[in-house]
Length: 45
Image (cartoon, rainbow, N blue to C red; front, side, top):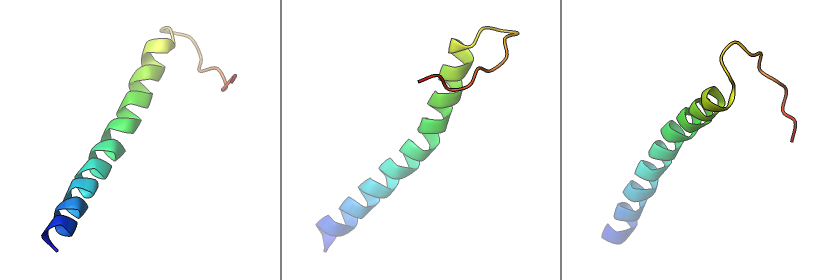
């Protein structure tokens, strides 16, 4: 049962880190890619 509990703790910590870092990277990428004073263009993929 110890390996299982350890695995749960690892996955929960990884999930929390991913949940916090992902939006931060997205916002930072948008701010870096969009020049100052320019309106946000729609997604053109």
